[in-house]
Every structure is written in structure tokens, then in C-alpha cells.
Amino acid sequence: MQGNGKFIGVMGSGLIGTDPYAVDAWSGSSRFFFGECDRQGILERAFGVEVHKALRAPLMLRNFSPDRDLWRQRFYLDTAYYEALSRAIVARLTARDQGCAVLQIGGIYNLRRRLGASRPIYSYHDGNLATAMKSPQFSTRLSPRSVQRALDYEREVYQSIDVIFTMSEYLRRSFIEDFGVEPRKVVTIGAGINLEAAPRWAADKPYDSKKLLFLGADFERKGGRTLLQAFVTVRAAHPTAELFIVGPRDLSIPAEHSAGVHNVGFLSKGSEADRGRLETILREASLFVLPSVYEPFGIAPLEAMAAGIPAVLTDAWAFPEMVTPGVNGALVRSGDAADLAAKLIDLLGDAARLRAMGSAGRQRVLENFTWPRVVNKMRAAMRATG
Image 1 (cartoon, rainbow, N blue to C red):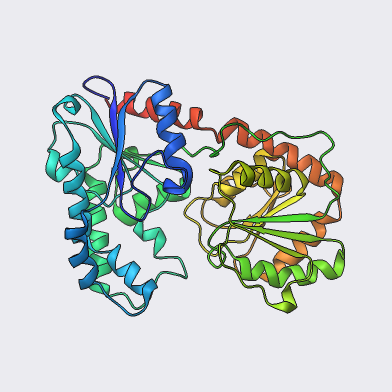
Image 2: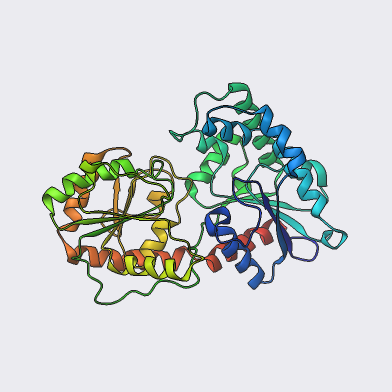
């Protein structure tokens, strides 16, 4: 970094949140990331923005659709909204910030266009538009022209940034292959678990409990329906198996898939009671399952592994960077309930193997997926380019 060796952290929009230190902003990651940057003395300050409602309302109206999901996707692909957010960020910078670099969360702000070449600009990502378009939930009814405008906007942003930091190697390849960014300008620094401290791991953890844990708010995107289908087969082989579903706020489970399933609902990390409930579930679970159909990164599997729980994940996106089959869990084909059921049945039948996998997974997280490690890697990259 140049100048005073510190940076200003910026973020915004309803996509990721407008308060960097909110419990749920950027899936909880911004609070821990900026907190560690501050602890290491490289953060001057961090702030978030949203476009004023007087400017936001016309943008929402021009993207209107009776289909709320389509309306939302149209609005968050509108480059006019990106420009308004960029102006809002620059308006918040002060004379005291002159000597600082800028680090933005995500690629929907074009700060170089407004700040010129006088200061370093960095960015940190768990995804980008090119990878989001691979999600089954990305609407095919969006205007190709609007999608291309958003892709072109991101390309300009990424080409102008000094260094792009990514949570995964999978995402790093996307910036290089989909947006033509020079490989030297894209650095994988990973991500950490969003917990104040690593979960306790009891030596007598009950790996023979046959309790499975699904943790994620977006039940459909995270493969919940595939899991429910597979769990029927799992229960036939292991009649005492139970599935705990944590995260969805409003979930209806069909009667034919409900045997042994506990719909816990949403648990907030900001609630002491909810945290206690989640800690109990983590303590008793013997296997974590998240067969996502699309995942930008995925912090939840890391938090489960930190609690000594082996993970069964989809064999795509960043998940193969977290799980080595046979070592700390298993990988399954996306949307393949039969493959998922077979691997769950196999793992649940061997508590000793689950214990060994749980130990290996916890060690991997504590060694590789912590915020101090992330920020150290980022600082090294900043120094190398500064």
C-alpha cells in the first residue's frame, strides 16, 4: 500500500448490506474481515452506503415486474444503480482519507472512474456476475442487453483495480477467464469462519448419533430439496437418523419427507439464545450436509468443520477446496439424490471414520480458514504491489 499504509473499506447496496459491522452484512463476513484489518492496524475506517430513496425509487420503478424475484434481479443488474452507489461512496470520502488506499467489497462500484489513478484501489470477492449466471436461480427472462451491460461494467471495474482478492481459487480463475484480468492481479486469500472463537470440540462427541445438519437460509439454492429426497433413503438404511434444518425462515416440508426431520428455522448469531441452540446442535451433529446447486463460497461448512463435523458438499465451486473426499468428508454430484443418499448411508455406518474425518476437518479450518490468515495474505499481496 502507498500513502499512510492504511485503507478505507467501502461496501453498500441491499445485496450485501450497508453496515460493515452488522451481524448479517455480507453473510457476516465483513464484520470479521474489517475487524481483523483494524486489529492489524491497516484499516483507517470502513463504511457502507445505500442510494437515497429519492434516487432509488425511480430506478426501482423502471425495473418493475409483477414477479418479485425477476424485479429484484433486474434492479440489482441495473448499472445506473451501480453508478449511484459509486457516487454515494465517493461523497462519503473526506480530506482525511486522501492518504489512504480504498478496498471495496464486490464489483458494482466503479471508483477508479471517479478517483483517478492517484490512489490504490483493491477489491475482495466471494463471487462475480459470471459465476452467478451459472446458478439455476439466475433468471432466463432477464434482458440479454441488461445482462451484457452489467458484465461490461464489471469488466471495466476489474480491469481498473490494482489487486483483486478472492475467497477461492475457483473464483480467481473466473476473473482471469471470464473478465480477462491479468493473473498477477488476482490473488486468492480465502475466508475465515464468522465466529468469535472456534467451537469447542469435545473428545466424547457422539459420532454415532446419526444426526445430520443442514445450515443455510436459502433452502432451494443450497440443495435442500435434494437432501429431503435423499434422506428418505437414508432413513430406510438408518432408521434412527435425524436431519436438523437450520436457516430457512419459512419452510414447508412435505409429509412424505418429514420423518426424522426437524425444521429448526432461522437462528440469529446476534441472539444469545439462538447461539446457544446452534451450539447444542453442532455439538450433537455427526455429519454436515450442504448439496448446493450454486454457492458463491460457503462459510457454513467451514464453521461446521471447525466444530469437528465432517462435511458432505457438492463437487463444484469452492467446495473441493474445503473437502478432500475420504479425509474430512465427501463430495457429491449436484442434484443427484441417489449419490447423496449412498454417501450419507456409508458415512453414517462408521462412527470411527467420522471421528477421524471430524478431527481432520477441524485442523484444516483452524490452519487455513481464519481471518488473521486471510488478512496476512492480503497484506503480503498489497506490499508486493505497493
